[in-house]
Image 1 (cartoon, rainbow, N blue to C red):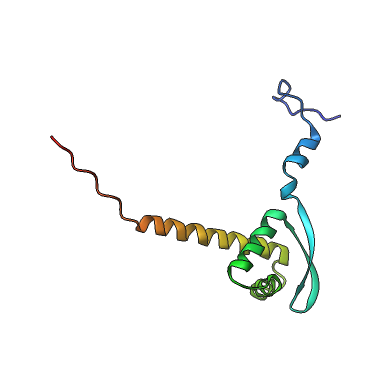
Image 2 (tube, rainbow, N blue to C red):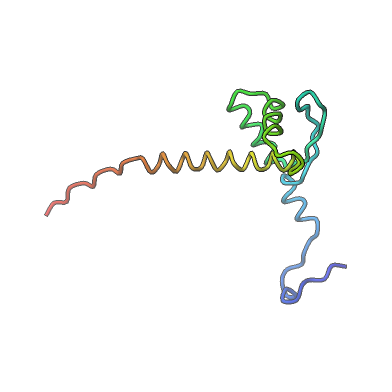
Length: 117
């Protein structure tokens, strides 16, 4: 039986299956891919996978070609492909956010309406 941590004894009951049902979209899934002509698999969360696919489509590239580019940029023996994909997606999202922030900053504010006295 699950016991609640100290300080949480009076909180509502914990339902162990709630976490999986609520966060099922973020579970790690293993996907088979072909990278550089070699079959391999990567294990990433659905959110990272969908962003990777969106990024490939936005660049007009095949997913396997983008994965080959990511793998080529990796330091040998320092990181696995799954981690490299997560870092690539994070980098792309940060670049998009910075581009939006810069374009918003470049917009000149509307002049204030004249005040009548």
